[in-house]
Length: 242
Ligand SMILES: [Zn+2]
Image (cartoon, rainbow, N blue to C red; front, side):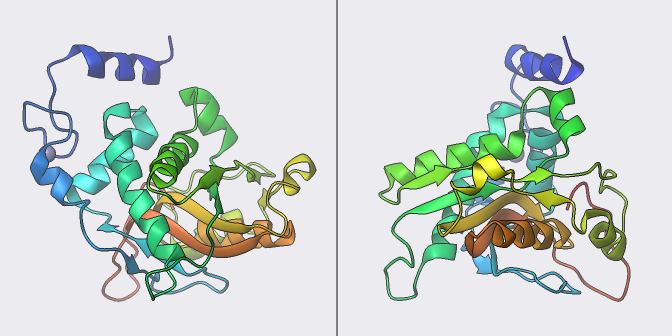
């Protein structure tokens, strides 16, 4: 049994402790849930890379939200998928709002940011895809029909983004994403919202947007759960993922 699956199994067996703060009693406590309940905002990395799409977030990538995003992505902790997906759904709705109470597009395709193949294989599933599907179900139930197309692949092997600075991340990913020909028809000419759990330097969203547009998709915006607020000068915060 892969170790990540064992982690997921033990999460079900052990007494519940909050993924965000370790408090006992539930896997995602009310105090941590409140950190995902903010109003969505348009976020921009600093520095902002060329080609960065309009991007919406609902939480700062910090504290309990960061703990939950890392646990979900790196350890396959399913207990936080639903709350993260609920927040992502709010972010998608913000991306589609026309400012007058209506929607820019009544139907939308959510495309998850690509995961590195080796990382996905070692975990046995793709957490970002799972998050997108869960968010799409919520949106559809709320009256905003959303389909999910996992259209993006990383066309060549890329280094793990963890520990790389902004420029290194951009260089690492430039030209790396593609839409396979058999999937292009599912996104060409259609309104797409690119979704991911987190945006930090923006390199993943830039490269994903480029690949989707090359396949003919109309990238309306990107939506994420959390964004890294960058402050100060030149010091790049270490992050677990772009
Ligand atoms: Zn908590």
